[in-house]
Each structure stands twice: as C-alpha cells, then as structure tokens.
Amino acid sequence: MTLPLQCYRCGAEYTYIGKSPHSAQCPACGSSCVPPAGSLTVVNSVHWESVNGLAKVWVHSVDERDRPFEFEVAAHGRRGKLVAIKVDGVPINPQVDETLETLPPAVKAKIEAQGITDVDIATVTNSKA
Image (cartoon, rainbow, N blue to C red; front, side, top):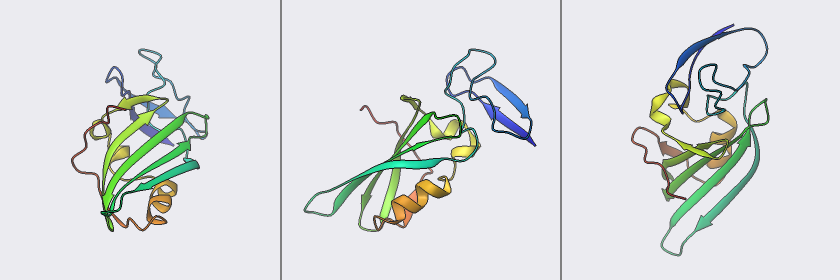
C-alpha cells in the first residue's frame, strides 16, 4: 500500500509504503500530528444539548498507534458542522489534508447515533478549547 501523508504541524508531505499502519510520526519534524494510522476506534463521546435545540457532540477516538483524535460537531436538529479536530491533543486545520475531508466511518456513526445526520465539513474553524 502506498499512502500520501502530510504533517499538520510542519506541512511536510511524505509517502508511506507498507502493509501495516504508518508510524504516526512526521519524518521531517518528529511530530505526531499526522493523519490517522490505520482505522479509528471510538472510545468515548459526549453530547450536550440546550433547550433551544442547539447541540454539541465531541467524539474521542484512537488510531491503531493509540494516538487520540477528537472531533467536535456543533448542531441544530439534524444539521451539524464540524468545528474542530484535535490530533494527539493539538488543534489542526482539517482542510490541510484530504484524508479529513470526510468523517471517519466510526466517528460518523457515533454522530449519527445522536440524530445528527447531515454534517458540513467544508468550512471549518478550530475551537479555542
């Protein structure tokens, strides 16, 4: 398998060739702020909803190298917007890498389980939290 990757910290682009998940570390700067290694597994989620129907969902997951990924979605009714992503605790811009243009299947399923079925990921701003 050949996998093009990009570091979220320094912007370095590199290619991984192999069968197992990539090393989860940028070869240029050593940062762990790189795309998920293998698939993501949801470990926890938190759902908050106000009386007026506004809601937030935080989905915590880990990749196959045990790095934490956090996805934050703000919603009203069935419509939501991806407002933040953290990789290994570091906020990143999800528009930097094509692998984060869609929600990973496990994360999407957890968000849909909260009744949020239409999530916009086109324009994202990172959370200050």
